[in-house]
Image (cartoon, rainbow, N blue to C red; front, side):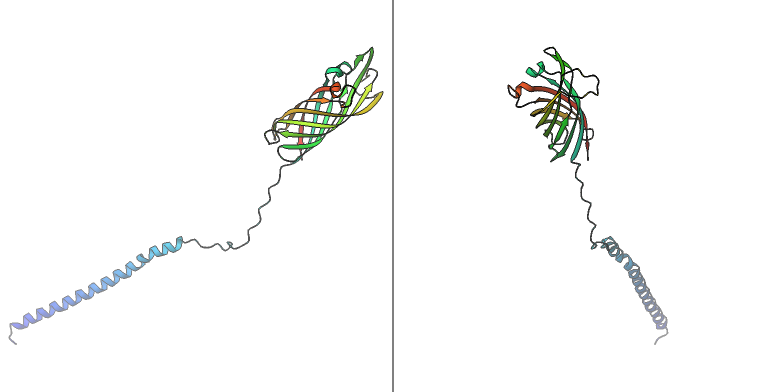
Length: 237
């Protein structure tokens, strides 16, 4: 081989070695880049795995039963005070009456109440044919009320019927506690009325009523008519 060819051969060999080294380094860098990129590529998959909701260990456990809703109190006790004023022919024989009333009721629904109602209406003294005396009324009635708004409050209409114990004293009463009577008789009675209850939270009750104190009196029920008004408060239980 000529002497001038040796340097050229050496330079060519050096170029081949250098190229091989660069190719090897490029392969190492590529593999390193893949190694670094691989965790980054798996990150979204990991995030998705974290976002998947896991089933609760108590999901299959039996749920505790919810407490049943308690119904509103249906029984009611009412204490009222009332005034009864005879009208028509009865006004010629009896003076106005006043006294306490009590009602025990039960709400079939928020619109309808049934119950029992009793009262003692003591009469003022009145002079009739020169004889001064007083007529008192002690009615015992079965009653029903219908609330227009269906909420146990607001306007209502009512009706009642039962027995009335009439007591007559043929002399002036000597004191407020004098409740004696010279004669007593029992007659059927009935009445209708309208009223208003302020609210369920504050059941103040006012009522106006027309009643016949004696349905079988001489001259018929109209012979013993009286109008009345009551006011009171109700207690539910």
